[in-house]
Image (cartoon, rainbow, N blue to C red; front, top):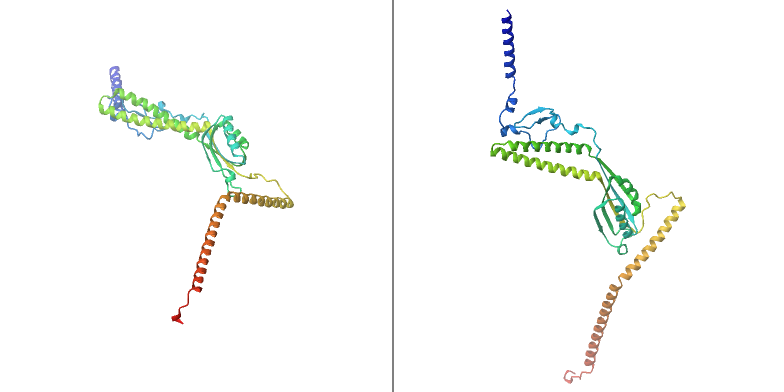
Length: 334
């Protein structure tokens, strides 16, 4: 009886062993097979695998597993520093253009920033023909440390009369760390492809791996460049400043005036406008003197020529008339 029981137990164990061997998946069988290029890599270059997708597990053959701990994305970490890009644009008026431009340079230096670009155009105010229009304009693109961004905006009044300021803020935290996660995935993939190249047995496998490695390195360089550019914008905020030369500054916050005060302001404004127009007329007259002199010379020359021509014409007529009066009488014709 004991022998029969032992025999039954042995048969059960053998059956369980055969069943476990038969349950091995074809993918697991591949893992024990020699390296082949078709098994080595099968994921697209433009879509690196992220958390929750099927991850490439490297090795001599392809082995994909759900939620592999070797490639857990960093996006699962919520302890990230916020990435904010701050920028602003401002317009400043000035009646002393050179002084204001110099003040811009001093302001940038005092806050540890730098000029990304600058452009000055126009002509001096005294050559401007239109009333109260700005003549020279300076445009600056200023990069200033993010911690000094607010302080520098407040100091723009040192440059001139601030008439307009606009602010923008962009939160790129999600994009930044998503790109960082993709970069980490590509870097890990690069290491594994390089490991595969050491195990490649054929020239075709080596060439295919080298091609894939070139694509990975291109993606890595592109992502690194994007992250560097974002980090520069986060570290240094941007201020686009325009400085305009004017004759009269704009009143940004006019004080409340009574009716008669407004009448007086209008009267004084009219007097000032008349004085300005008279001065402009005088300037234009003085500027036109050379042209007027030349024009006067031409007119005088024309008048003289005309008078001489008329005089000569009259002299000829008088001479002809005199000759006709003194001519002898023809008797045959009497």
